[in-house]
Length: 454
Image: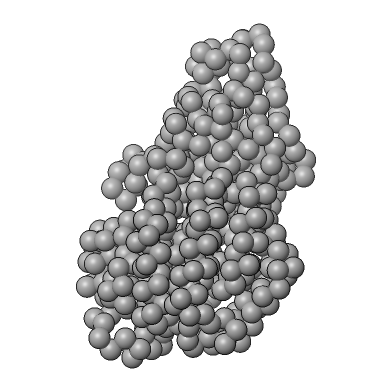
């Protein structure tokens, strides 16, 4: 991490969605030649660059023209142990788990291997502009400790937890309710709220978690009421049917979590593809979030996410990459795939604009994690979590941006064409956590005199 000079005035074309474009047609805010004054890692002033330059003549200027500055991306569903198996195509969910995922997850019993995987994973996040992630951890407590240790070194914001299961996986990945509780408690006491780390209670899914495991998770959440909860729901038709058979007394998949007392404002349920109207009503009543993972849903053939039904029911929706069921860490790619899926749904879909895609990739994630007062947009008082997208000179995206005639065209082009190669710099809480070769360090243009820098 490279701390920034303080205070610093960032000059950039920037965009953000301080409100929800699904309910506010004017949610997208754009500054073509904007300024963000950052002091102590937080945004203290925002607006037109020329105005801010006059008001704060002593500030050091960092010139980010030639690209677009966006709030840091927020990934609300991603698996740390799966980074090295991205691209396991050709299988539905349960077959993919058996043949690809679970053997790899078992290798994290080695702390040495787990540390190497954690480094690969965290690098994948930051070099794609993701500054905050809700992370499915490992089944091994020691590997989760390793993950938090490595995450602290990168400066990223991570909400993560030990994954717990006691059936239908590999024996070495199983635990007991007693151990799930005691190991989870130890991890919470060590990591939750330390630096930029938070803890998420994480049963893998009801298919592999008995009532005893779910009750142990609920005990942790009762004892530590400010932790988060995350799991999977209604991803695959065969999975849904199996859960129904395993919980004959439950009304549906969601009810397995609801009866245990696991649902609330900080509960994020991934996928939610085959969700019933009753479940949507209950998710809304509990203020849960559905984490939409479009690339994974396509790659594993899980189905088309019913975004319109979720929003009409009042369910909050954010977005996740679901690495390694998904195909990479890029939230730009997820946004594009989300757009495609809604197009394919026809009248059942919800046409998405570039503003929707930006919101789902940023502020929606902050709301899902109950961090909307801290991150997710460039509002005054928020942390300076940001990604500067500047395509390499001569690239196709560079040509498109140079000829875009509106901010909407620019934002659409970023989602349609942007890749990891276009991420130039990334900041979390004012600290630079990634810089592409050629963009290391601050472009300090001028501190004094206070005349406008052109």
